Length: 48
Image 1: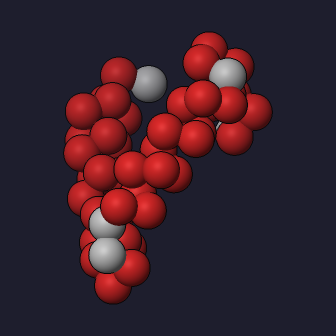
Image 2: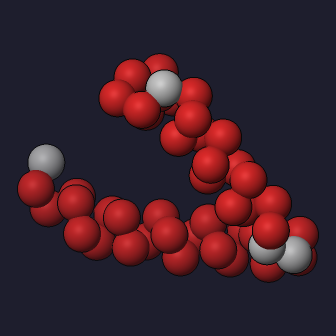
């Protein structure tokens, strides 16, 4: 799955996501990832 994510944008996409996530206080990171995951699943899961 990670390989699939890196194909269209290369490692730059992963670097940007990690850099943005590092801006979030450590105690809040899990909640941010959960929220983003819910939003992505809600928007795109029904189309697959």
